[in-house]
Length: 361
Ligand code: F6P
Image (tube, rainbow, N blue to C red; front, side, top):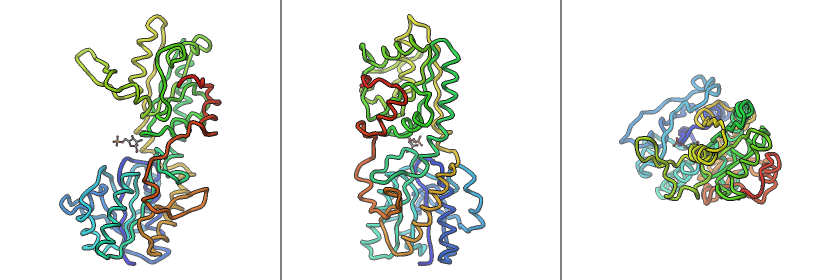
């Protein structure tokens, strides 16, 4: 093999630049591969009709990029015509493609791999699972996830200071995670100042004696402040076309669970003065540089990814399972998304640490 390409797709995630750097370094120093092409702006960069050009990657060019968040190559969401993307690889004599991305990206690179096989080409395609959401099935963890809750936890500490500094102060912190609550739950566990963690895996009621709002009232009666962490995908069952929130100038349909909760709390406590602070650090978290633990993980992922590709393996992800690096077929890890098991020791630890009543269900 002589030529590699690297593409980064989807939302930002701490550690992307570490992986790019690691892949370039391992190719160069381990295998003497000098031609490494950076594909700009995700799969768009592989579509010749869009034509973003290529970025030549060398150790000199990438040596410092791990210091920065974001992606050195740029990213985009969504797929592109598979056949055109394979044409680009073939026409440019690329024989290894490293795709750094989440669920959609991995399915995309698998489709590229299938088209390559149909054409009897010998191009290895490798997926490196990247998402702060940690929702890739079967693997221990996706890179960026640890940094995400690491960056989130001091924000929770400060949110607690805000809440505790006011009489009946409430801080609501919204965290990302798509349809999984891993970031919210892990951040709460890492910074035990949180009293409620609302996650997509758990439907909860707002109204009634054991509904969230009355449980919150009882908490305020006792402690005079509360910290609520809400995962962006939580409470979908509450929206279902019936909770349209109107602003002064007309109809706005809120599907932002954080703002929705804030509104519901304000409404519920109109007889009971509360001070609510709403904090949404989502994009700040996602674009942070990797912490030390993710940096180590990213370098090791890159190293193993390069060895797999050089060995001629294709359509696999590199990751750890039970703390061992493995190559797993992309089709296996993309069948469904990983979610928090509400019967797991992990979730019970979150409930115990927050003191969140089991009854909010
Ligand atoms: O999947 C990564 C992620 O950061 C999710 O947590 C979030 O739902 C999504 O991307 C938001 O991405 P964007 O605002 O770029 O569409």
